[in-house]
Length: 152
Image 1 (cartoon, helix red, strand yellow):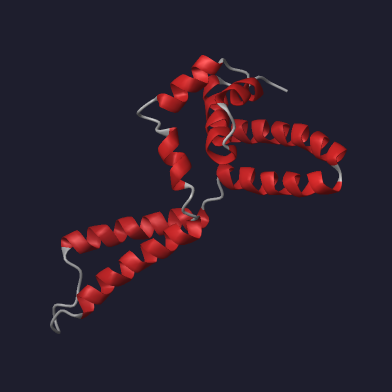
Image 2 (cartoon, one colour):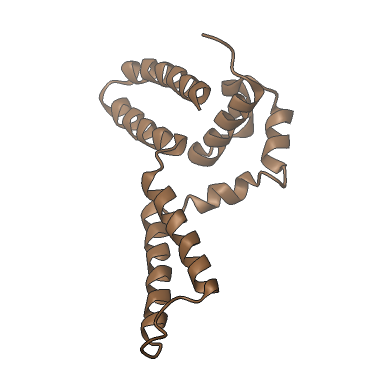
């Protein structure tokens, strides 16, 4: 298997940090970089991995629900306008376009975080049934994640 680029390793490390809440030392070992590199990536103010980790506490369904509520509220405001003026002004239209784009992105996106979550749940389940197979699957799954990162 070909070696991952530094950007691919960084993306993998980010997913391990955000999704699995692994220690920086363990992430460094898994990804094949130094602990110092992991620490630099985690603490990079432009990346803000901690904020991303916290944002995952809100599920996609909750995020979608919030976005649909915002869109509904704008529409209700428009409906309250006098007849002949029931249309979005430029600011409302701009907000509606942005909210709609965010909804589409959340609904259509099957990202690496989703892949991690499903794999993690499957491996956890498998551990209770056959621990030795689970260990083998973890190695295979790591290979799959590396392959997926190369495709993105």
